Length: 365
Image (cartoon, rainbow, N blue to C red):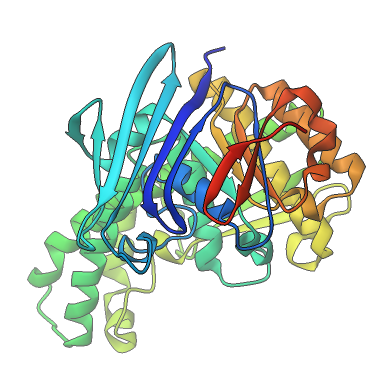
């Protein structure tokens, strides 16, 4: 199995950190410190080594250190598939973030070809009981881990849909105005649907094949179209058939932007939304671990895992089980917690970092 890990992380004027440098090996990284010390900021910086807006979905402007507001830069040295890469990403003057790989300008999509990065943060704890938008993003991150071009398909679809929605709001009746946009939406939308279906299939297989201390979730992808969508022509016909209804609503009512992810606690046969808070958290952890196992089977390497405050929600037995599964996967997991004792079960299997104000230092635990 190929190894993926971050060996060096450098931050400049990023969030609370004026300057921070972390050097580590392939072991998990346990980060501890008081609330507000900047622990989550560290793993947010790591999340920017993958496509997208990072684990907080923040704007480039929001990530700059105040009051200087000079812009920010994150540099990571990654070892992946036997090769080393230097990845730089930055924003200056509140502009959209830019990327370089080994000194050459690159797209965010290219980041997904180097490293797969998955995360679990406290804001996701209500995933099963809030709106479908968050569940789609959760599934899309997983789909993108298997298919890096998934992000490109999503952007293409959303751009065309915004244009179509503008026509609908303006009550444009001429079908010729819609045709090219709906063809683009059908092409990119079908790619999104295939990638999501494939992700659900791989997650299901990874859960069924695993011996794990965390509960299995039975997953279903809920799609709103009246007839099954098997190809681009089917989706194009769905857009065309819904046009009159969409005109009345002033927006597009069918398509992958309306899909939802459903989960059932398999052993208890209870929908995830009706489970206890602890059970819902355990299901999320189970899916992240399943995603990691599926990636090992698919691409031969585990992802980087970013687990913010995950230990605080688990009892000692579950914490130990989580750490055992992470190390068995060979994954470099960056984990945060307020107290070092939360990571006791890791022992010598981790690198420890203490964060105090904007200072980051290696610690002995």
